[in-house]
Image (cartoon, rainbow, N blue to C red; front, side, top):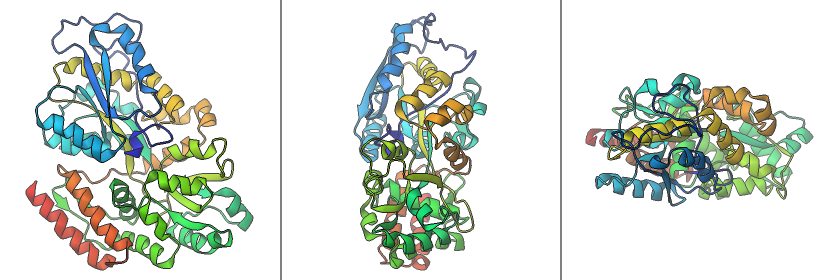
Length: 426
C-alpha cells in the first residue's frame, strides 16, 4: 500500500472543499447539532500515518465540531495486513469504523460485499477532480467512495548519465531496453527495476505492461475476462525479455517499493519505475542522486505507456452509526484547502486538477506536470468483487513468467483459466 502512505514510505491521502455543501461546516464555523440523526463522534481507519501529518489536519475539524470528534485508528504499514484487519471488522458487522481510507483497488470488492455505503454524487465536487480518479471510486454504476489521493507510476532516470551519453530519456520500450542494456553496464549500474516481488506491486507492474500494449485483464466490473490477447502476451514478453536479456536484473525480482527506491537512490540503477514519493526522498540531502535524476511518463511499445492508478479513496462503512457526520468528514478531507496541505506536508498527489497548474506548487514539486500527464493517461487496476483473488492469480502467473519458468504464450491461457474460475465464483 505504498501509494497510500506519506512521502518516504508510499502515499496516503489528499482532497477538496465543497462550497455550499449541505451539512459541511468549515473550520471555525458553528457545528451542526450532535443530536441530528446520523451524527456523532467517528473513527477514521487508515494505514499507518508515517509522517504524522493527518492529526494536524483533523485538529481544525475537532475544534470546530467537538460533538463529531474524529479519532484516527492506524493499522499496520502493510497493504495485506491493513486489508485483513479492515475486512475482519467489517465482516463481523462491527460499527468500530466510520470512514475507511482504502486502496483504490479495494473499492469494488468492499462495495460488492456490502461493507461500504453508496454516496450521493451531487454532495461532492467530482467535476473538479482529475477525471480518471473518479472511476476508481465507482462500482456497478454507483459512487461508493470519494477519491482522496491519486498516484501514477513514473520512470525515474539518471539525468547526468544520459546527458553524458548524449541521449534523451526513453519514450518507448525499445529505447528503454537499448539504453538499459548498453549504457548501464558502462557506468557500473543495473539497467531497470520495478516492483517485481510477488505482492500487489507485481500486479501493478504487470497490469501497466498489459495496458501499455493495448490489452486489458478484466472488463464489466470483473464479469468478463479479457486477458487472452496478443496485447497481453506482448506486455508480458516485455518483462520476460528484460530478465532474459539482463537489463532487468534478477535482484529486482525481490524488490518492493522501498527496495527499488533505495537501489536507485544509492546509484545502483539507471532506470526505475516507482511512485512520486521517490522524488522527495531522492532529492533530499544525503541522497547520492540528488540533483542528478529526472522523471518522465512510463514508456510503451510506440510512445507513452499507461500507468496504473494508485492512491486511496474514502468510504463510509455500512455499519457506521453516524453516516451523515462521516460524509461531512469526507467532504472536509477532500477540500481544496486541506488537499493543498496534504500535498505540501506529505508530498501526496492531489486529486484536484487545479492544483497541478498552481505555479507555487509546481516550483515546490517539479514533477507535478509529469504526474498530471501520467494520471490523465492512467487506468485503474482490474475491477472485481474478488479483487484479492484476481491480484493473487496475476502475481503467481507473472512471477513464473519473470522467473522464466513459463513463457508468456503459455502463461496467458493459464491466467485466463484462473480468472474465469474466480469470475464464476463471484
